Length: 325
Length: 302
Image (cartoon, rainbow over all chains, first blue to last red; front, side):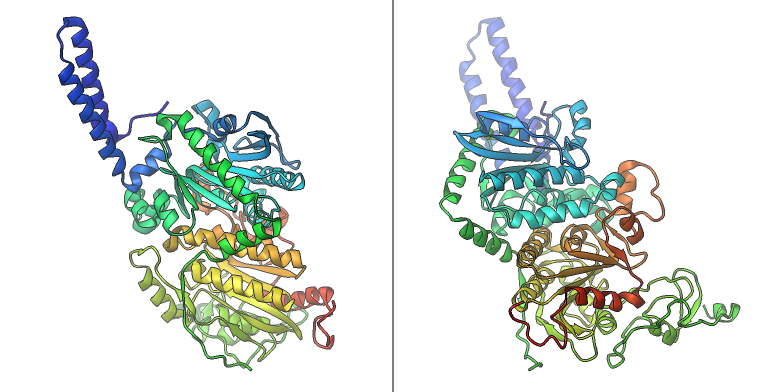
């Protein structure tokens, strides 16, 4: 269930006022319709003013709301038939990453994503969507399989980061992510990633080297979580709001910085307010984008993917006289 | 400090631990900055070491084997044949894409202190006559972190190795992706890895040498993608920071956690090599992959 965020309190208050008034009308038989209409209009205005002026930190809070669709919810909405496939064939099955094969509008597709739990019990099972190396290796196995059978790959990213634990280090968290970056760069099939909530650093990137990157309206994607950035910069993780602003981690920032290819609009207040509508918007974007990518030959696709990442970054270059011959 | 000087006298015995002393150090480029002064105290065992003695021992302690950090110019002189280095892209430096408070000051300070334009030096040179493209990260430069400039220099070096079809050797020393350039730093991991994918596809050798410290975004990209991964003894090599992990699992970690030796034991590193033997080890690797060294002449049709 979605919890109430602080900046939503005025909205909730107004909503309950309207509710009370309606109940009063019913009980007393008085006609207060004009009054109710007025308040309803005010509610609409209030909602649109609150949600259209969210700060980066408030957006981070929306992105973390329970009740947002998870990868398995997207899969259910995207695919008419789907079979989840398990395991990295090496160590174990990592429940923090799910993946499998299915049909999307009748077309075969591989879908993979980080998976958060929908309640505490499931979250513990899913390790809060923080994957171990075997999760990234399972993802790679499924991507290679998709390549072999010429299926496009759709990836959903919603993770605070790759799991920072001893077991993960022992099994090569760095190597698993690094390998995914390299192999995804050369995967001979169209790939699309959707940052659906949290895009936490290398753990997100490990599923995110793709032909197209779409970011949900309230999602964030950053080299470091705002709390950690604040802890480093100001020795105070309470300054996360300031860090969120400084780091430029919101959807629009990502578009402007050339990392995201597009923003997928969310229902007012966030995906958790209307999950089914969100899933449909995502599906629409994924389907139309795949149709575009399928026009390209594999060689064109790989070249475009390479060029896209090749161009990322901003630096200064001073011309240097060549000393050598 | 000076009291320590007289406390205990022990002379270093050179060349005792290693059959061969230091292989072919390029003496024409004097090692700068490290070590400072005539006498240094070993950070690990506390022994006093003469600067010359340290230099002769490839900046490692002859008593306990501790590896001192070396800067990029020193590393190049320790690794390459004399007078063979030609630098690439020396004019590339960082800008401030996010308008991050204090970032440019940090960059300028690092430039002044290190004498480098950025946190990596790349170029071309020879190791025992074998031509290589080489990149050396410098941990003094904002912890050796990778922003757009480092990513671009690396990617060009990787592409150059591919064009020339000569082996690529990268020495890593980095705290990871550079926070001050945000998501663009993260994308340098993808950019460098994409370039390495092409190099691998082409079949050009890439050796990564892990030096202290190699963590975060660098560890989780090119550092871990070498066809062969060597590491210096004691070098920190891992994904997440020790403190973060301790907070996560709420227990203390073993002392050797995330060291080169730990990673060797867990299969993430091919070989831990003492700095004094690194050049020889690289030479052997190049020879095995060979035919492109001095004397082979023709570099086409291989």
